[in-house]
Image (cartoon, rainbow, N blue to C red; front, side):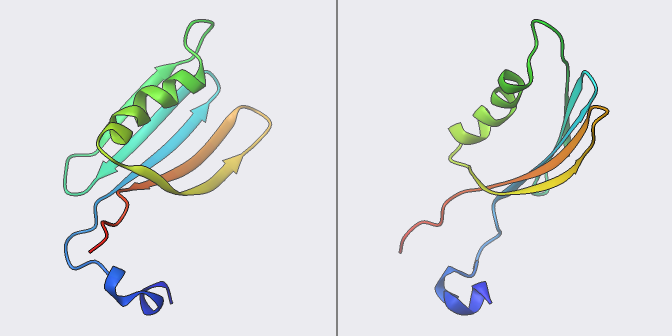
Amino acid sequence: MAFASQPVMAQTVGTDLVIVRVFQIGRKLEFSIAHGQQQPEEVTFDLNKEVKPAPSYYTVLAKFYAQGYVVQAVIPGLTNNVGYIESTLILGKPASKP
């Protein structure tokens, strides 16, 4: 349906997306990053008094924002009361206007 509403916006070249899966398990924050055909990247932070979640997200996402990516969607995942949180971020570059 989305392609039908804007056929010009349908990709004629490869889609430039970054998929970031985020897992927080207790005091460990893990990012699993898929970027096109590149080798997947894993980034892990051990959270403590000095290492907080928000700056860790910033560290991972800032490099993609610097390359022109923006968050296109967030897919919430599992969350429970024993310290397990999971979600997925989809980043893409805004379509250039013809």
